[in-house]
Each structure stands twice: as C-alpha cells, then as structure tokens.
Image (cartoon, rainbow over all chains, first blue to last red; front, side, top):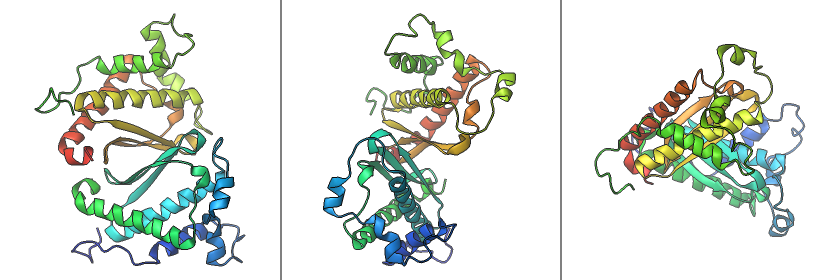
Length: 155
Length: 155
C-alpha cells in the first residue's frame, strides 16, 4: 500500500501515462536501435489516421508488432494504476483468432479493467493526444474500481 | 440469477463436474470420431501416470491437444460455477512460452479463480477420481468467492 497517501488515491497527473509508456518501450530496446529516436518518433506507430485504419485488413491474426504495442500500452496502464494505488496490477491479454480477444487488468481478485478487444489489427489512436487520453481514462476508471472494492483488490 | 435458490448456493453434487466435462468434449466432436468411445475412454487422456508425466519434456510450447484439454477442463469448471450461482463465468487462459501462463475465471469483475499455470506440458491427473476432485475443488472455491463478494461478481 502507498503509505504516504492515507486518503483517497489521486489520479496521476497528465503526462504520467505517456512517460510510463515511453519508459516501457525504451526498456525493450535492448540493442539500442531506437536510441536515435525522440519520444514522438518512438510513439508514432501508435497514431493511425482514419485512412490508414481503413486500409488495414481485418483478416487473419493481427500483426505481431501491433499486438506488442497493445501489450506495452496495457503494461504502462497497469504500472500507472500500481503507482497510484500501491496495489500490484497484472495485465492478462488473451487474443483469439481474427483480432478478437479479452483484456483483464487484475488487482488482487478484482478485474480493475475488463474489456473485450475487437479489431486489434487496427489498434491505434487518431493522435498522440488521443493516446494519452485513452490511457488516462482507463487508469482513472481502474483506480475508481479499486477504491470501490479495496478488499477484493488486496486479496 | 438462480431464482430458485434464495439462500446460500449449494456446491454441485459429486459427478456434476465430470458430466459437464464429458458434455464439453462431446460437443467438440463435430465429425463423430469419438462416438464409439465410452466416457472413460474419452477422458483417458486426462490421466497421466507419474512415469508418463516425467517422460514429457518441459521444453518449448505445450502440445496443442494438451492446451485444448486444459481449456475444456476450465470451460467445464466455469459452466458448473455458472449453474450453481446463476452468474456468467468467462474463462481467460493466457499461455506464455514454455508452458507458463495465467488462468482467470471471471464472474463480473471478480476473479472467482486466479491461477498461475506451470508445466502445462504435463497437465493431467493421477486418476479419473483425481480429475473429478481437482475440478470440484476449484468449483467450490469459486462459489465461495462469489458468495463473499456478490456485488463484484454481479457487476
């Protein structure tokens, strides 16, 4: 538990999620291939224009890199929830065929986040700002769930 | 909700789990390849002697059929929890490399069951009786969890 915060947990400040996502991505760069990229360049593959989205076919399984980006996104979300609440959060992403799947962010026995994934082939956001907003929204909702059912989250 | 049971939910009688598992397996037999097999023959691959277990190497990914058997096992467990409590249960099985993974049986926002999977290559039981016992134990624990946190399970 976060001992320094006895009252209700604060939702992380704006920018915290993006920093965590960048940290997650850079941590995977074991060969330094992206060391010349700045943060915006690193996040660029998360941005999909409407035209680009439409071009991506929804057949067969999603691209490995797209799935990896989705996993990094939810890893960063999990870590932000964890630092805000002091409760360990485990992401469980299960993809079925054709880009469908299920995502659960587990805090103890509580599914702080539970989502059906669809069209994973087209996982992306209209802008970096939309990426931040999406991450921050999920984090805020998860923190609310954990505050509502602390006993289950601490199991 | 099971309207006919206003009091505490009863753990299913012995035999209920095995019947559900057989039903699950037979439902997958779309070409009638197993119609000549009796129930014991159908369940036989779930039984692994100590010697057979030791022989199975723990390298690379588990056999597809073993993973399928594991999924059928937890599908049957989920359906038994569902009929006892009236709450829909979704199994989420995520396997990582080398036979490690995570299993969550979700009832609403409650992880009625949450397990780390290990040595999935060797998923099996010493006897049919041990198979029944394992299924029934998980079902009983999950029902207990749902009774403890009904609000979360009904979310």
